[in-house]
Length: 146
Image (cartoon, rainbow, N blue to C red):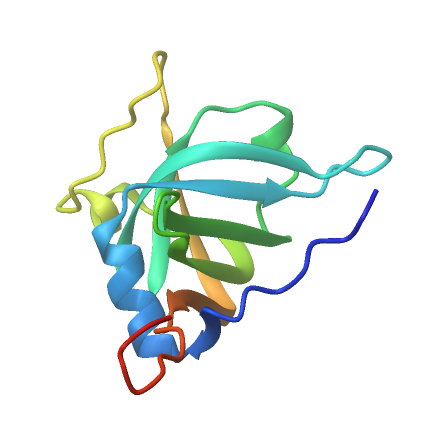
């Protein structure tokens, strides 16, 4: 299989933490990565909110919950325009901790998935990184031809 060649009309830009947080606030669904010993990492969708510079979501008990508290976790959120081939991706890496209900009572956090989600979990970031892929204009000649 032939490797993909880079597109001369696109550019990858590194985002700073503040811009990453703005983009995260626009979204409500991300992919949570949790390591479960002896298994491949578990990646599951969660709906979340940004609370200051932390991420909060609700979850049920179970294997995922049992292996995320006090452990390194990741949350990846992105948006893409497939037609124009532009978009962005933000990765939050940190440690998960259980939240007190009083801490999250005022947050607009309502799980989409059916079932009871009694545990509120906060990701305290150790790293927030992001990238944006943007189209750039192709070069033109003096007659404005491509």
